[in-house]
Length: 145
Image (cartoon, rainbow, N blue to C red; front, side):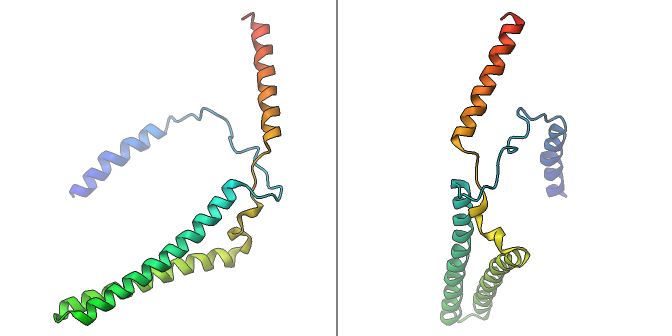
């Protein structure tokens, strides 16, 4: 009962505050295109996904070894069961990580290839900034400011 009260006190006010949210900017990502060139974000996301899979595999191996050592060195039946649980939890975690990759690859192999995502060119952004500045100058001259 206490955890539901904490959940109610913490989550419900946040949801109420979010009802009146007005974004300060419009659609921030409207100018992002897929021109075929790689961006820093695409490289980061691809590297982060690959790093996450490698980290999951390494941690699974560590937990399997730890559980195996616990099984071998313990004399208590309960400690042996704890070791077996560690090994099976590591195997399930590794399978979960690999299945997540398999699902993404089955849906579309291009999902895992982040090189198609790109950001707007710096020249395009500078042109937008200069157009915005010109529009601001025009507003100032019209309003008499």
